[in-house]
Length: 399
Ligand code: PMP
Ligand code: GLU
Image 1 (cartoon, helix red, strand yellow):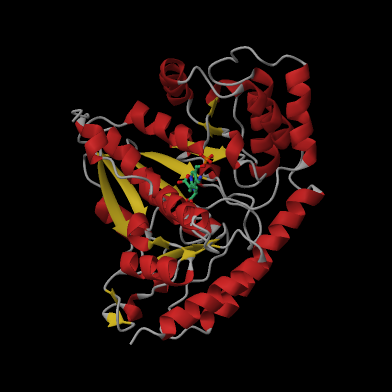
Image 2 (cartoon, helix red, strand yellow):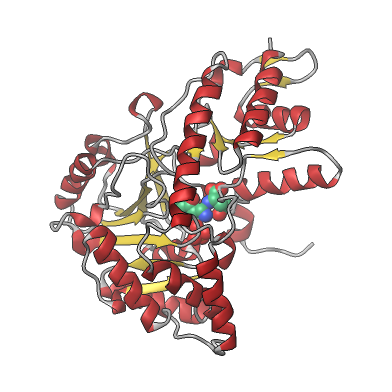
């Protein structure tokens, strides 16, 4: 057997991608699977963006792009940051990568030395923990409770800080909870870091435009920590462009340069055609008909899910204000059985629902809360209604 490197042996497979793979396998066997596991919009990329990519091919954007991204795309991202977030950045502070996932990997690998601690409010997005593992950093989780809408308090962050703390990473709107930090809450967090000038703040804002409570608030707006914030964003979610693989950071110059250097050795930069499509996405103000329709659909689906799931006994619901996830506590069902299959944890419950009624979800352990399961509701209301009906029936059989 090949002796694989320790870093691969220690690395966990992405649970979101794994559940999605399992549901594809069951579907290939002819089963009517409803996949609520993968966090990806079900909409097609808007035509105005697709057309920009078609033109880019005809215009021969087929050569290696500059490693950190085309200059006009980086300028467009700066314009977007001013237009949507009132933040001033220079193109040299922007690095475009192969998805926000690679942007996060670039940042972590550029900053974290073995043994450095990375603070992660929990629940958190699956890949943070594993990327930190590759960098041989130590994840320090800060648990947030469902009663507090899964948001951490400044004093919890303060208590988790140690001389080894290097950075914090969190998403708002949050994957997997859908929670959105308010401006005041972000300011409270920012004030903690004002006291700790060596800690960097990675703000994952990939769900910026899927926000049901109004304007997006970035922690980068607070001047007193601004020079330590790394904004991560991208086109996957807001513009239904998951497959194009374009993400970016806006960061202090030194960090942007480090990511550029790393990326120059790893990928040589993101796909040229996808960058031209992303340019169209970013230069167009974010109130296109297509975007408004997607945002409206996500809100309707959120409302529908809250209504349908409220009718399931024992399920404790959180109230998502953004993204397209809901993260209920289902521990009421632990220790119960349908007579044949016993459910002892969230993983058992997800497997029970997948094998019995063909609904794919992701166990909360993947995101740091073993009492919960994650629903991605980025699919049609018909499918959501059918999925919850099936789940209700299957859970009803657990005694
Ligand atoms: N951050 C969060 C919180 C996410 O949910 C995702 C999901 N894909 C990403 C980053 C990565 O996005 P992408 O690589 O598709 O840009
Ligand atoms: N971010 C999405 C999710 O959480 C896509 C899957 C992934 O990139 O891991 O499901």
